[in-house]
Image (tube, rainbow, N blue to C red):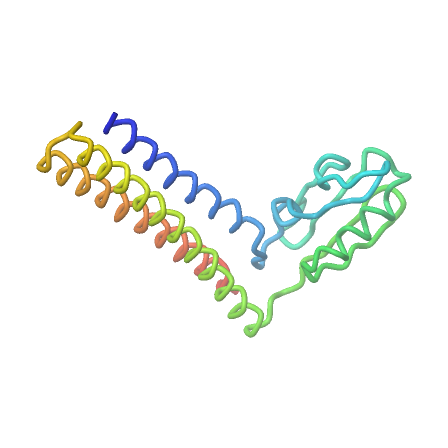
Length: 185
């Protein structure tokens, strides 16, 4: 039972890190990457869909994204979706593909993005700590019920703390790497 609690806590900490990395992919850097458009929603066919379900996204150059719709009749909806996404990107439509040139980031915008990265990082750390708290509460409940000894409970809580420290360290490493990427000119 205790092993399951610790394994579940580890899984939740890993998921927090994976979610953070996915969020980081949406943060704009100086380079073009199709992941930038992951959060873009397109209203077409009477519903709202993610852009990657209606078009092919590619980055043929370091400062250019290309969106090739599978159905050219929805190009205007795709353009509207990109403009609504608040990414600060301007799509250019040539009738067959939509080209999005990625402008250089200003120093001020880079600093804003670093603040956003740190905020995302803090949310991930909170998720890691919540996993620790819940695991520790479950261990305390087992101790109260007499299923495990006090020494065993103490050892397991230390084990959970080590997992937490490791999780926070991994979040910090990912954050530092993303900050370097954002500040890179």
